[in-house]
Image (cartoon, rainbow, N blue to C red; front, side):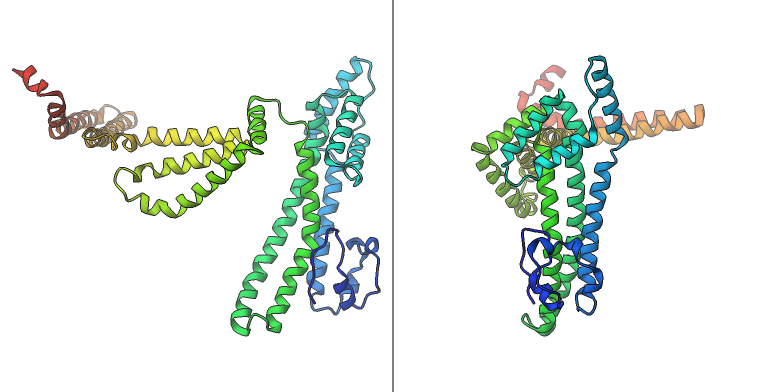
Length: 383
C-alpha cells in the first residue's frame, strides 16, 4: 500500500480500502470524521491514530489560542477602545473582527492580493491604524499559525528520522525492495501524508498574515527594500553568497593553514553570512554579524597586524606581552582588594615584571625593525 501526497487533510483512499471502510467523498474523508476504532486491526493503525490525534490536538490548540487572547493583546485592546471612546467611536469587537479576517483569508475564490486589499479595507472601515491592526489581529494570528506549523513539523520530522534510520537498516539487511523495507517506507508516507498537508496550511496562513502591514521602523524599511531588490538583482547575489558559503565550508580547513590568509577565514565567513542576511532583507541580523566581526578583530588585533610586513611580528609579540602584564597587574590589584596592604608587594612585583617583559619585547623585536625602516634614527638620537 503506497500513500500519495494530497492537498487536503484527508485519509487517502488506499488507506480507506485497506481498512475495509466504505468509499467516501473527499469532504467526508476529513480526519475528524474518522473514528479511532475504525483503525483497529490495521498494522499501521496505531501510527495513523497517533498522527490524526496529534493533528487534531494542534488544531484545537489553535482555536483555543485564537479565542482566548493573551494579556498583552487585551491590554492593547483596552487602550485602543479607551481612545475610541473619547473620540465617540464604538469599541472594537475582537472576536468579530478576528472571525471576519479568518473568513477573508479562507476564501479560496480570492487571490492573496484581493485578500490583502479586503483586510486593509476592513482596517480602514474600523478606523484602526496599521500598527493596531497588526498587533490585535494579523500578527497575533500569524504567530499562532506559525507556532502550530512548528509543532506539526517537529512531530513529522521526529517520526521521519526514526523511520528513515529503520529503513536504512532494513534495506541493508533485507534489500531495498524487501517487504520489511516497504513496510517502513509505508510508515514514512503515512506520517507525511497525514501531517504535512495541515502543516503547510498553517504555514501559508502564518506567512500571509505576517506579510501584512510591514514594519515602518528604520530596519523594517531597509529590510523591505532589500527584499524587493532581491526579486531582481539581489536574487543573483543570494545565489553567489550561498555558493560562497558552501565553498568556504569545505575550503576553510585548508585556507586556515595558509600563512597570511588563514587568520582572515573567520572574517570571510562572517562577511558571507552578513551578505546573505543583507540580500534577504534581514538588516538587524546583517548589522549583528558585522558587529561580531568587528568585535573579533578588536579582541584579536593580530589578525590585521600579522598581515603587515615586518611590523606584524613586533606588534603581535608586544600585544602578547602586554596581555600577560595586564593579567599580572589585574591579579595584583585583586589581591590588594581582597587582602589589603599585606599583598601590595604582589602588585609591585606584577608591575615590575610587566615593564621588564615589555622592555625585552622592544629590545628583541621593536628596535631592530625600527632601525631597519627608520634608517638608524634611534642610533643617531642616542649619539
